[in-house]
Length: 272
Image 1 (tube, rainbow, N blue to C red):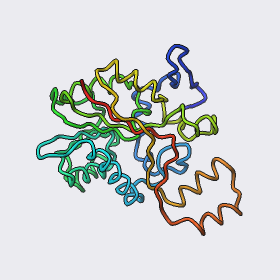
Image 2: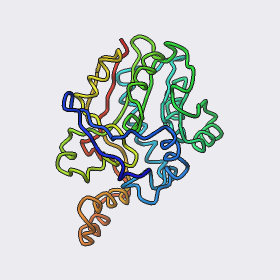
Image 3: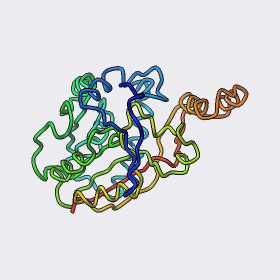
Image 4: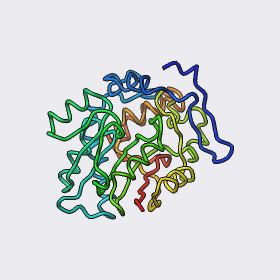
């Protein structure tokens, strides 16, 4: 995708920010090919090595499912759909928590590996490509995905159709109105404009939920477990090499830790 052909626009009416023009579905399919999960520059695109970070991903998933189950008690037969489920690590854990799980993922290799490794029911493509039954899920999760989508409204409408009344939709997404976004400006990691298309705040998410039949129940910042190598890589991206400082950081920081940068929103909405 040639980013010189795209611009970041803001709606003067509602404040919503988006990439213009919106990439085509064909461009997005190419973008999220096998190279997305093993990128040579994850500051700009994808993950350095998603599968190598499996332990940190699972630790993050445990923290997030504990948060979910503090509000929603999983019971036998309750159904969960994870949209953008990658290699299935979150789904495999959710199954241990007692959920009856399914997933949707655009990357074909990730679908194959997750299906074979964990014996999961994962559909290839987008949620609207599959005829899930009306009101068939109790919980839909969408981790760090909605900002990548060509049409977020279609996601919310389809999620609203397949969720049971009173069911929950849980997502995470960068907050364009956050303090780190305002301080870092165009270097803020949340832009990542090779892959991020839509840029949300609590206010714009609330409007999206209201117009698609949801009520916002919970919204706050959340972090994840990261390696010290990723932390230093991001530090260099923001502040430059500064070898004297990064050398000290390597000595004093543990090999991995939980970090909340206060620019990622955790949102839970209920289907009305």
